[in-house]
Length: 259
Image (cartoon, rainbow, N blue to C red; front, top):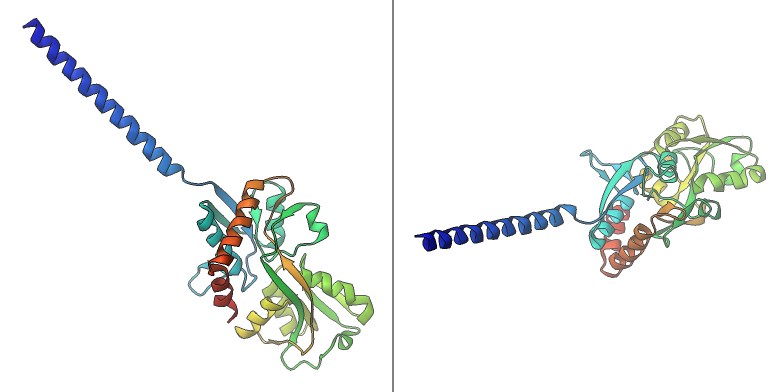
């Protein structure tokens, strides 16, 4: 009888240990599945179509949005995209509240002092637009007038570089829609913006027109992180960008907004 009880007790202990082992393995698997890849906060602009904007259904979309999402999928990390406005997006990265920024941001020597950039993912020229029906057809026609620019952009730099030469003054706006409306209302004579952005807005019905020959000063857009930080994220962006260019996804994204 004692022998029988000993055998039964040993069997119960074996089953208990097996059950405990199975539970631990399942927990490890669950934890692994939940952890996934790294998650990064990515700051961007609010209204800079076709690079970032809200569509008719309320979805945040655009070339930059689709590119960072495609790269995240390719490289196995997650992104939390924060629509902040251009200036606020740069400050968020500088202060460590965001890991990276993609916002139609031109790569400049001045910005390289604060940010580490990826290779260019898009090259855009700057152009001038005026209200429909305006008699302004050239830079010379801006003499004595006020032109509008968006703060911190390549268009602003371009306009300011020619202000003395053509005799106009520059006023700045925080976002593109407000800038456009100021020109349409006749408060300012013209505005300067990257060509694909301006052309997209004209295509979508903005009461603006682009005088012939008023395009120049190309600039490269780059993804950026705070200088000296988030090197892994920057490397992942580089690798993912190369991959989506090679497999055709990059061109598919560009074509969906520019054709």
